Image 1 (cartoon, helix red, strand yellow):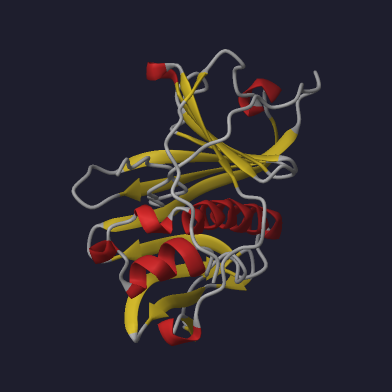
Image 2 (image 1 turned 90 degrees about the vertical axis):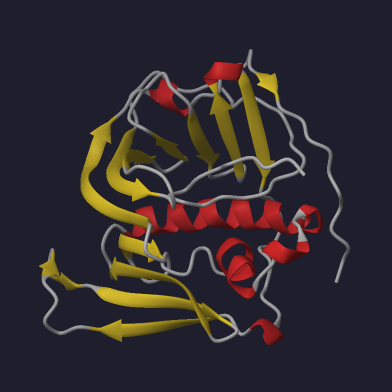
Length: 245
C-alpha cells in the first residue's frame, strides 16, 4: 500500500488513484480571501504554523511560503490538488459524487456541550463538540457558532472531497487500521465541527492538536496562489475499486 499524506490540519489519508489536470486560467485582479493561521501538531512531531487561504472559489493550505508545497481545493470542480515542488509532481483527488453515509451499526454521533463561563469571541460563546463512534471518543473540537460561516462551509467541502476519495479506496487500507474511530474521522464525520461553527481548537489524544492563532478577512491575495503549474508531473497510483453496497 502507498500512503499519500494530504492535510487539512492533521487529516491523513491512504489515497489510491488520481486524475491529473491544471486549473483553468485565472483573472488578473487580486481576489479577496479570508486568511487563517493555525498552530498544528501531530503525534511524534514538532508544532508548526499552517496557513489557510479561503476564497469563494478555492481553499489553499500551506506553511505560509508562497512558493512551497501546498494543497488546493477547487470548490466548484470538487478536486484537491496536492503540489510537491521537491518532486515537481501533483496528486489530484476527485471528490465528485455523494459523501459516504455512516452505517447505523457504527454508532457515529456528535455530542455538544456549553460552558456559560467560557469567554466570548465577537459576541459568540464557544461550544465543545465530541465525535464518537461505537461509544468511543474519537476527536474533540471547540467552535465559535456563526463566526466566518463561509470558512466553515469551505472546510466542510475539503473534508467531503477527502471522504469521497477515501471510500473509493477503502479496500486498500489494512483491516487493523479500519477501527470505528478511523472510519468516523476519515470517512463519515471528518467535518463534524464544520456545521457547528468556526474551528477554534481541535484535538485527539495527548499530542494531535490544531488551534486557531489569528485570522484576517477581505485580504487581497495573489491569484497565482490558486493555480497549479501545468508542467508538474502527475503522481499516479493504482486503484482498487470499492464494491458497491
